[in-house]
Length: 295
Image (cartoon, rainbow, N blue to C red; front, side):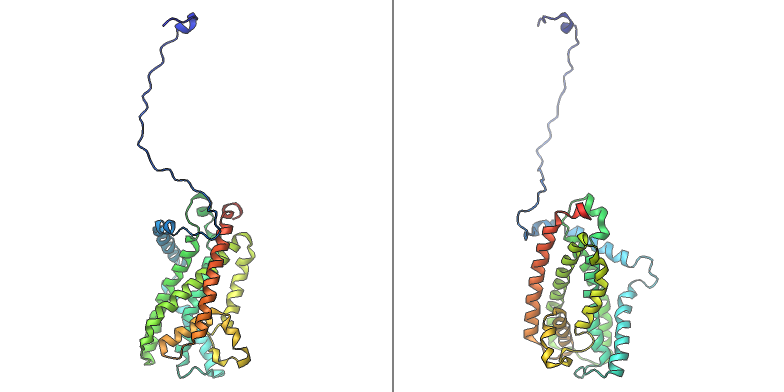
């Protein structure tokens, strides 16, 4: 081939470049969902191993450099039970329907301790994982969910003492024990619902982190942990119905000790739990888009 310009004709020939074509690979595009309530359950299932590792990490961090280790899962409810027994059984003579007050108190405290630890841990979970949230993509709901699962493990450990106390006081189990798993499940769902609320709001409003401990203490007094709802004056009986934890704690005791179930209270509590969970998911999904920017 002739070139009109002699300089161009003097240029060396360009080397041949062989491009190796790679096989087609799936392209993953991360986009925000259009619906404010959409939850991708398939994606959550895909990241189930991450939920396991986050839960196990929270458990190890909780007991890191603790001399007593997992014994703290038992000591906390035991100490609360001892305090309540001294002041409310020995001094105030609270009526428990024939159940020994230490057993009555511990059954309420062990479920309440799970709930309190779950909402406190999940409420602070996003703020405590800034580096993880700002650098890697994964379903953000897994972070507060892992905190709830870690608290559920502490609950399982503390429940072993409850079994020993039932043997000590010779309280025989009844067929109503079959109702324990559903009661624990709705308590876990309620803790997850409140945890989603507090975790999302805590990212933007750090006052939530300061308000949580005080709110948990007040909530304890408003629940049926120390005294049964039957001790509340009749004109105020509607107040415990607004607190699902009161119904769940009393249902937990009824399943263990064979007392009467308050069906309407449990129905109201389950309805409040479902509504709170849907609202919590909605708030979390709406605020999730700005977590990396404001955290």
